Amino acid sequence: MRLPKVSLPELTLPDLSLQNLPLPGLDRLPFSSSSPSPADTHRRVLVTGGASGLGLALATAFLERGDRVIVADLAPTDDRPDSVPADAHYLRLDVRSEDEWQAARAEVEKIWGGLDVLVNNAGIAQGGRIEMLTEDDWRQIVDINLLGVARGCRTFVPILKAQGSGHLVNTASLAGLVHPPTMSSYTAVKAAVVAISESLRWELEPFGVDVSVLCPSFFRTNLASSLNASDPAASGFASKLIDRSERGADEIAAEVMTGLDAKQFLILPDPDARKSYRAKRFLPAAYARTMLGMGQKFAAATRATGGSGAEAGGTGATGT
Ligand SMILES: NC(=O)c1ccc[n+]([C@@H]2O[C@H](COP(=O)([O-])OP(=O)(O)OC[C@H]3O[C@@H](n4cnc5c(N)ncnc54)[C@H](O)[C@@H]3O)[C@@H](O)[C@H]2O)c1
Image (tube, rainbow, N blue to C red; front, side):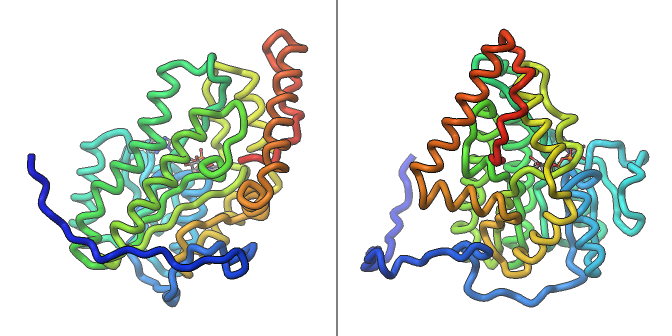
């Protein structure tokens, strides 16, 4: 196939010296749009994985501001989970199903005629040393955490482009930016969500569509219940980090809403996430020592217990 010829304006890199490189502030990394919009209300919002954890906290925060919300999750539409706020519309949407995405789009068009905010939030956790993660583990997490986001974007971007407005919000994780040991399948798909989000940011900006990617560190939710059984030591390690976090989903959601109002692209909604990301960028040697230390402690704990890693949860990681 012959590709059409496209002429690009001449691209030149700006003249940079170390001195005038922007040093990002802790709260606002340098990716926010130049024109923050006022907090709109009465927006039409769809949140996947909205019956629990961060999705539920975000759905509640949107509703409190006067937005209209569809909560989508795995339970059947006529068996609405009790957790879903009374003023939200509820819909079954398994993000693995192309048909259910099409049905969600039809429902959105029927009741609202369009969509202002899509929050691709549904996800599962997964831990595991590389040799213990099975191919089924990989397929499952790719299908939900990565393809689930891609399907959501593919389904709703045509509507947002046609409107000339809208906001795509993808829940990744700090694990998409910094990559601790024993969670390679999770870090891989979350890094991919960060990458999709950045590509779409440049692709959709000309059409008036904003993109944000959420990269929180660990916070308490039901996420640990989705952990796989292939490597109990690594799953136990991840489970402790989630369950013992000092933060809950409401705190993360409040920070996320502030970032969304500012049309920030990269939203790091907690101090641990900001600290880890900055350490990786600006203190690579210290970052490497921390990650290696985690790997060594995990290796020592699993060696001492013959691979079960009963002690591995005590590595004190601040990762993701
Ligand atoms: N909790 C954390 O420490 C943490 C940290 C960083 C990122 N995240 C991300 O935040 C997002 C939300 O997770 P959470 O912590 O609120 O967990 P959670 O388990 O409380 O909520 C996840 C929701 O997604 C739903 N879900 C799972 N598979 C689905 C599917 N195939 N289709 C539709 N819905 C599905 C679940 O039913 C659940 O309601 C996930 O993408 C997760 O990876 C969580």
